[in-house]
Image 1 (cartoon, rainbow, N blue to C red):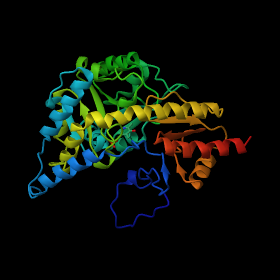
Image 2 (tube, protein in one colour):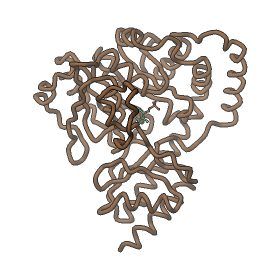
Image 3 (cartoon, helix red, strand yellow):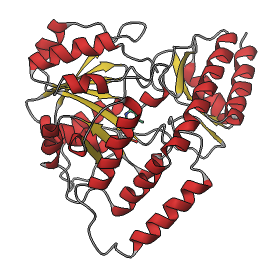
Image 4 (tube, helix red, strand yellow):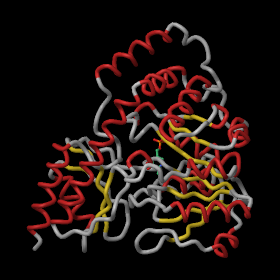
Length: 369
Ligand SMILES: *Cc1c(COP(=O)(O)O)cnc(C)c1O
């Protein structure tokens, strides 16, 4: 959108004038497999509980919410402890309006002019966008051809980062980073005086759920693990993301967060969802099975599919991915052109949605042979 002519009177920062807003297209088509949401909506029981809980707090909306969201952080700690055999306390959890807001708070606290953050690309584009918005230099280290991270201490040392981002399972590739690599990065970043931020937005979909940086976090105070309720928890519309970190990191973020950042309504909705965690996470098994079915069907079509530990697949479309993306859209199926040469990304939807996608792409691929 560098075609935007900003009005002369608008004192917009120079470095923002040529930038474009984050924009996954929001087309109103019947099959939307482009933003990695969970396709299964909340159950009737959860909808009723959310409605009742929100009704109960509606009468108190004249008051500000709990600034520290203590009940919610306590419930998130209990949830993680039960699933990962940990002993986290609320003082190690921070929660905000989506993990994107947590990322922004990390940049506000530890980034800024004269500071550098590093990411391993291709990865989640918001890390770079938020870095720029927060005036932090963003440096990219390319992943290898299979999207793994080759540890290169020198290269990291040269950049003197204060924040190092690793997404695992990675978006848009779906690939998980090995525990050995994460541990290696934790050791280097400890020496560099940087935070190692492991974005685990898709952790619940991993084939090996025990491979999470949560175990590293208990050994390394500078390791920060980001989680979200937007994906496995099927709560993207509520905007709830959180981190697990040393209590000092949580305290540092309170220096930069807006007061009362998380509304009473959001806190109530997230608490209700956590009470239904068992049922919400049951849909994860279905999504995983659909992901694997999509992978084998695409492979059978002769397409290369990147092994995925997430709820989406990256697959190679030799030649003209954007044309295929457009033709799928014309037949009512929206997937994602992530701007990665030769590849497209599809989110695992319901089995009906996936069937529609598979039928459409089968026709397109076969017609080009
Ligand atoms: C979807 C996603 C998020 C989630 O962001 P929210 O703000 O919590 O909705 C974070 N990180 C990655 C890598 C993602 O793909």
